[in-house]
Length: 147
Image (cartoon, rainbow, N blue to C red; front, side):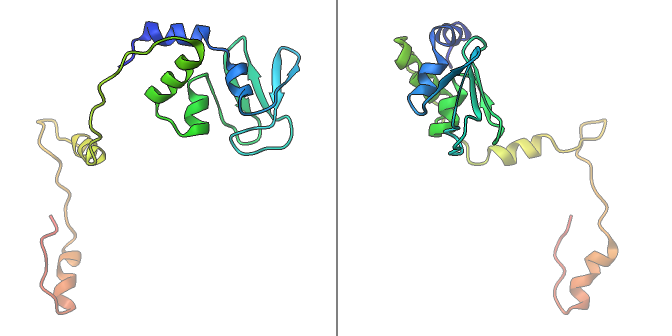
């Protein structure tokens, strides 16, 4: 995991207008910069970059974010890759991070962990409709356990 101090250092040194400017022509408009949105391929100046606040916003597709979320959305990078992408442009070295293997069953494990529990910690049981249980037998099939 990348430390918060390193993230803040990278964020402080990064120039969002320069990073966005690599992908789209920006023009100064007051205190912000405007141009066509590179995220949805817009034509008009509907994409705004505020260098003081370090954020961007498209007023057509609604996408917005900071210096790290721009490469994530545009290039499809994950957070660590986006941090390295921005750090490379500002000259900050990011130490290698050990990646955990992606658990393909993570969503299922979370759903099971969040299932409703009784006050004593036992899982709630839902009553099964008797008509539903008898339905396969009426159709000439063996009933299966529903419970």
